[in-house]
Amino acid sequence: MIALRPAPSNPLPVIVRPVVYELLSSWLRRTAHVYRVTAADVLAHFGIDWPDPLRQADFAQSARIKARLAWGLRTTAERIQRAGHPVSVWRANELVAIDIPFSRCTACEWAWSSSSRVLRPCSRSWYEAWRVKCGFCGRPFHLGGSPSRSSLDAVLVTDRLWRDAVDGSDIFERYLHGRPCGWLPPRLIWSLASIPVRRRRRLQMAFGLIVPEASAPVFGMLQAACATTCRTINPFRRVAMMAAIQRFNQDPLGWLKKFSSAATVAGRTAIARLLSTLPDAIAGSMQGNAPLPAAAPGYWCQAVEMHQVRLKLAVNLGQIRDSCTELNVNAPHNPVESHG
Ligand SMILES: [Zn+2]
Image (cartoon, rainbow, N blue to C red; front, side, top):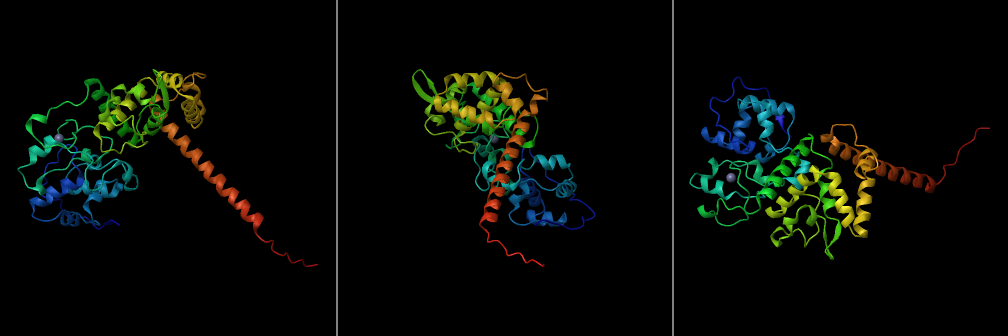
């Protein structure tokens, strides 16, 4: 647990300037280096007893901890918030790499290669599964390879696909923050895109309709079934998944119609099952049977999510009730004493 002691009289006199998208742990480590102490010493100076490892600092913290960190680092709580992942630790195993980053930026590795390891900043974006580009330099993530000057600017996907992927990645982050992010939660868009469709007599996934670029083997989209999480070390696959979010949200009804008309019998069943888990107003308008809901369209995604949580709770409650009933039926009846 993190313990908060009374704050010292003064914050640190010198704070290293954070890089945009730098992780809080990285910023603390570089600041500590100025004083030739560890990050844990700096936190202790702020009156924060932090459990090891320091990496925990990068996950959603309480407002009080954020305020204290902001005071200590002479910045705002918003800036502290931005230096951490937008997910809490319990969600991190799906979306955030803990030890080894998901993505490497060859350009940044090259740029910092001459400085010592303690001084090299770490970017949030390298650890986050929904990112397609480096937060520091904005370049697309590369697949491994040696950092050499000639490969730094290599463009690996078409401009349009890249733009859509970057926009999709922004939508995903808004989704994590609970801000407007379109029609359906990203995982539902991906499960829709994973339904089997028949196209030119060939069986494939709806992904091939919405992101036709992803049919190249390097994307690894068509061989394996699509996951409902963007956690993948294949940057091409991630680009395709993010582009699908953006493209679907631009014309949800149009895409749903296209998916439905190309879907196999199993695909149509999957679509029907998915629509049955949406709030009536949204399912109705997606099928074209009802006018669009009046609520701000950006929040439909959240409305869907809430509805699905409620459905799941209802199922769980139902199961609990059933097992209670069963227990009652099976329990030996207690003899009731009668006082006549
Ligand atoms: Zn970079």
